Image (cartoon, rainbow, N blue to C red; front, side, top):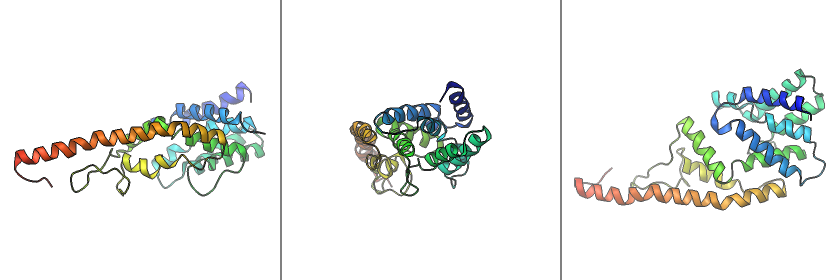
Length: 229
């Protein structure tokens, strides 16, 4: 891939990025991580990999506006049509489309090519560790999701059994589960190195928000002379 081709793809990506949890810096982190992983794998087509990394989230705006849409599918179609429009080979465009359509965290439509597997792992790594927690908090702030929910007894729910969306629920529902099912050995190792810091952050944050409810609520009830609902 030469500079002209890279700039064409990069500039198109920049016109499609919106929210700060899925901004251009996320794209670059995924790309750089993918290149690190690629260096440990065999027979990687770097042109396909770089194009797929640059364009993998260009469907985010459509999903944000309509949550029923899948940004991976929308983005794959957009990327394919963009590449064909700019005279890329159809086989190349189809390979990039496959990478993008299979990069989302889910159990169906799994990546097949090595480039798709690397993109999947690199994108998943950017949801691991503290950067994953930071991105989740940013995104949930954008859409108005609370940090936690409060149980009927006045304590803060840890999120594990919640049905109401919150950051603590998201941690148990998704963030703590991402450290398995990587396709590459290097991707698995990078994620594992980040896991402890994410676990420590969650447990310390839960303790900090729960203690005031445990201690202050009881003290307030004494002062006002009745139990709080």
